[in-house]
Length: 205
Image (cartoon, rainbow, N blue to C red; front, side, top):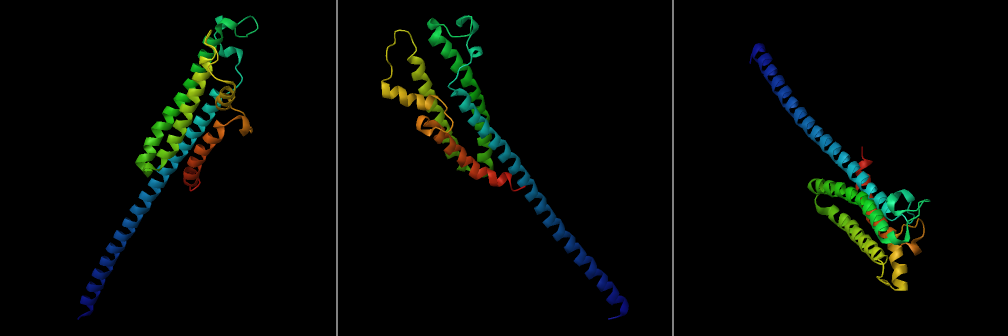
């Protein structure tokens, strides 16, 4: 083999190796780009979903606030110092809880939408968590309805003494008083499930 043939062969080998190397680098680069893109997508979804969960948690507290401010009642149902008139006790409280409930409803709509996105991204693992929050929502709704029924004029005692006490433990948010608030620990447990699944994704980037 002549020197010229050796040089030509060497060039062909170098060109071939360079082409293979470029292909490998391009393939690896594409895989890294896809991995980074997926990681960024998961991060954004996890952050949005976690924010929606916290918003639902705050909405629960808003609905369950044991203190009703004067501005929450319709003006025509209050006296000159903002107290609800006795004859409007039922309707006034219905208005308050219907208004508060809208906040929880809107927060849940957003959580439901993002949970569908999470199901597409990660499968059905989040369904248990949101099902638990839905159950807490229904539990609170029943407690509110029982409370409002008890305020209907002439309706009598809808709940017995013990039932009334237990209903208040669901109806009212009492910070750091689990003995007098049986719903908050259940909500916290559902929130914690989201935390354990989403926090590692959020902290990954």
